[in-house]
Length: 256
Image (tube, rainbow, N blue to C red; front, side, top):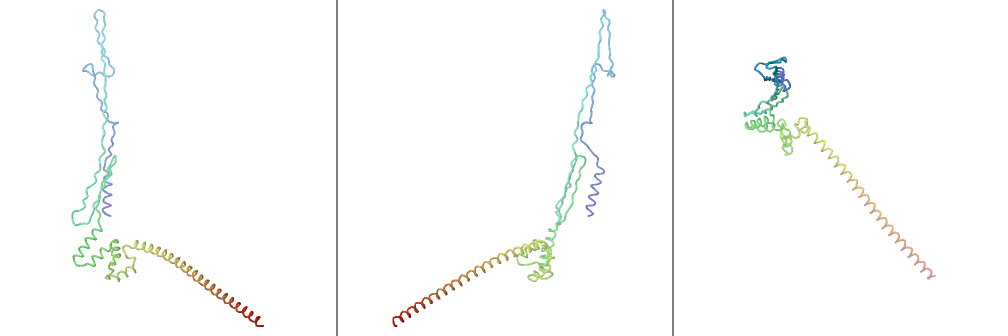
């Protein structure tokens, strides 16, 4: 915040003390005057006359003054604003330099600033912890990055949670999911999966209803076939009974 205030104050100071320079050729007048006729400049419309009276003749000599004016216009180029040079820091420091400049007809502004590279700092701190033998702490530090957290989860090796590792850590992360570094993407993933599960459940329900309907139709068809076979058997019995009755009647008639 202090650096931003200092930069704004510096830019305001430059604007206050800068002078306005315009590139204009209409106000530049360079006039030169050359008089021909005599070495003495004659101004104000004076006329020099010489009269010579010889044999009644008069000779008149008139001197003419010519003024030549020349105007040379000059063009002044606009000054350029050069952005300051900010290096990427050759030291073992995670910092990045950014600079820029803007120039106009009357003024120019340039500035720059260094920004911290938090991902670079995380990697360096993790390496230091690993060199000290703190492997779980080094992994925990890297797990603050949501990409690393997601990769560890997909690999079946969840990030540590307050001293717990493996399935116990995963159980804690699921319980306190708001503390996950990828909480927003995690919630979005759960919503997407829930929607997919609902669609699959609906497909399974429809398939089950179809299977039940087909099973019901098959049983009804089998029952119908059984009824037809039973009716056919009953009809055969009735026919056989009628035949036997007719035969008995015929025998009784012949016997009588």
